[in-house]
Length: 146
Image (cartoon, rainbow, N blue to C red; front, side):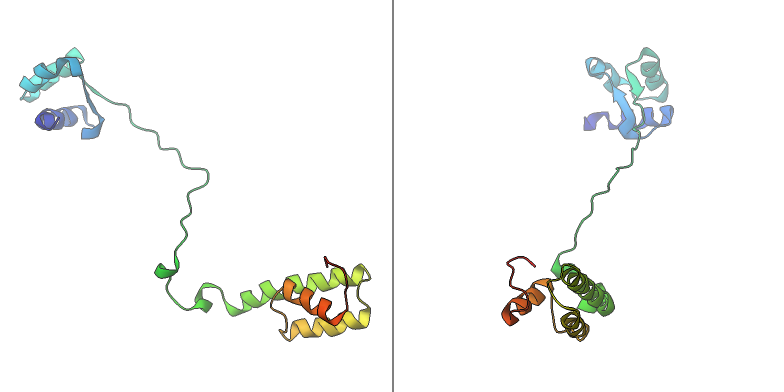
């Protein structure tokens, strides 16, 4: 279709659309190839051999695709991605909630709760699993699911 580039360009100018929106009838390609002037292209348009396609309606996506960055393209230190305070909050809140659940279910006593709470505050436990392991090893809670 590269031999129709002149006709496509002229038709786009006449129809006031982009080149990609110019449609040409495949049955009349030989006649369109012979049309090399603006007036001949206008005749082709009036015959209906060349038309302007409808503009595409851009519909926004409901959930745009999110691309995750790989480790190689990340910039900055570990702390610049997730601040130390936020990381601390993300660790401590679940631990404290777990202790409250254990206290409310009467699996640990109030004094033991206070002691464990201060250990959590001091940063002794990495995660809920770590706290669970500590409780089992010390014999504070014997259940298989705490």
